[in-house]
Length: 126
Image (cartoon, rainbow, N blue to C red; front, side, top):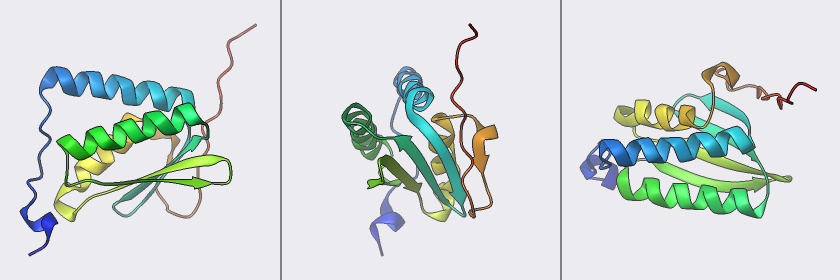
């Protein structure tokens, strides 16, 4: 029996804590998310690099490990970007998808697993 067989598939956060976490995740996504590629049950999110973004991603990954230990999260560097990979056991794939979507809009996602769709930076009107 593996850890994923014995780890409950449930988030331990209460409603208020969950809302706060989602606001923080969405804010990071709005500032730094470049793309989100979904391939099967794995979500690969690419962020603009930088020490501040890395620190925020590391804090979110650590926090998620505490409340949702069934999720598999990793941060890597690729070129000058940061890449967050999110996956889960089959029964928990909806939770992995929900976390990935919390970083940005579903309309910016490439579900094909072949390419990456890019979020276009929105500039304020002059």
